[in-house]
Image 1 (tube, rainbow, N blue to C red):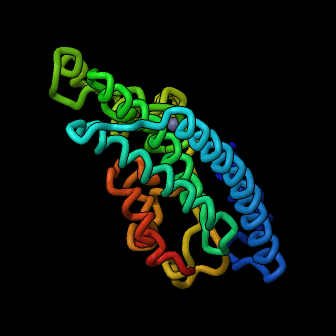
Image 2: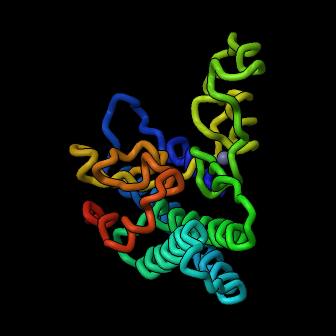
Amino acid sequence: MFRRWWFLKVAVPVPVDPAAPPTRREARARQALVLGEWEALREHLRGVAAERVTAAGAVFRAAELHLQSEESAARVAYQWALEAYEAAGRLLDHAGDEDTDLPDLAAAVVMAEQAVERLAAAHLLHAGKRPGPLQVRCYWNPLHGPADIVLAPGRGRKARQRRHLTPREAAAERRPACRSCRTAILAGQTPDVLPALLPAKAAPGRKGPVLVPYFAVPRQWSPWSTTACGAYDQGTPALVLSGEHRRNAKR
Ligand SMILES: [Zn+2]
C-alpha cells in the first residue's frame, strides 16, 4: 500500500534542462500529485483505524474485568489498556482535521491493537498467569506485523557467530523489522515505509508539500517519528489524552 509513494519522485515531469528550475505548471502538477497521493493514503488509513477501534471496542465490551483491590498488576495493565483504547478513539476523532497526518492515524491503529494486547495481559494476570511483554512492532512501518526479534550484537552464541555482518545484514538489524521489511532490506530494496507529509516549517525554502519517511520528520514537529507512532513509548496514551501530541501539529 505505501510502497508506491516512493515513485512520486520519478512520476513528475522531468524538465528539458535538468539544471533549470521547474516551471510553475510543473511545480503545480507535482504538488497536486503529492497531495492526491497523501489524501488517498489518509483515507485508506482512516478506514483501517476506524475498523481497529471498533474491533477493540467489541473486545472490551466482551471482556470487561472486575478486579479486586489487591490485584494491582492486573489493575495497572487494565487501566493502561483502557487509556490506550480511549487514546485510539481520540486520534480517530481528529481524522478529518486538516493537520492530521498519516502517522496520527497509524498511532490510532497502534493504540487500538496494543489496548487489546494489554487487555489480554490483564486477564492473564487476573487468572494468576504471567503475560509476556507487548509485541515489538516494525520500526519501518508500525502498521506491519511484529518485528522478527534478533539478539543485540554481542549477546548470545548466535550473535557472536554473526559478528561479521554484511552491510545489508547490519542495516536489517539496526531497527526492529517485520519479516517483509527485513527481507526487502536484505535484498537491497526499500522497505514498505510509512510516509508523512513534511511540515512546511520543517523545510524552510522548499516550495510545496513533500512526502518523507515518517521517522525523517524532525521530532519537534512530530511526536511519532522517534517512537514508531507511539508503539515504543508506554507514555503514549497519556500523551494523547493530555492533548500534548498536537502541541506542534499546526503546519
Ligand atoms: Zn515492516
